[in-house]
Image 1 (spheres, rainbow, N blue to C red):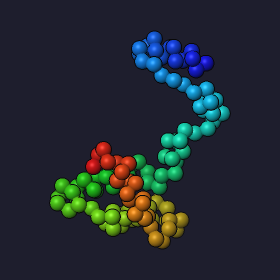
Image 2 (cartoon, rainbow, N blue to C red; image 1 turned 180 degrees about the horizontal axis):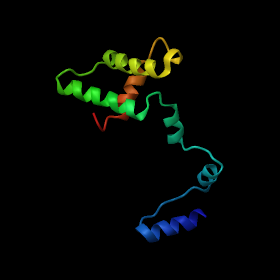
Image 3 (cartoon, rainbow, N blue to C red; image 1 turned 60 degrees about the horizontal axis):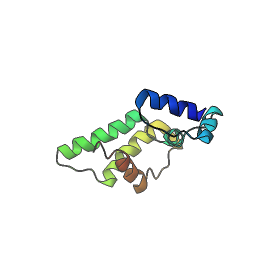
Image 4 (cartoon, rainbow, N blue to C red; image 1 turned 30 degrees about the vertical axis):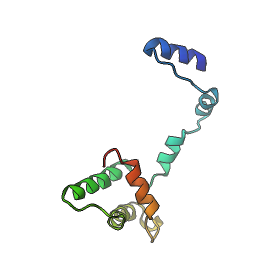
Length: 108
């Protein structure tokens, strides 16, 4: 099956791809891709992520680069509103804010 789709794709695009039969079988059985599984673990919803990115950009444009502490305060506000008592009293850590900035570096 994988070889058939590789040929069909090549005929349509003139680009070669490799499909793994194991991955195809896992998708058929309902397994999630690594990317999909990671997205489901994200604390911030896509709209909330955009809100934070826009906040970082807006602050920087006004000459006030956002520090980890300020970013943490804003993210904690959003997540406390979203998750209520389920959200950690300590809030997010430096690793969370660093990863958020890294994930969105193409926009920042």
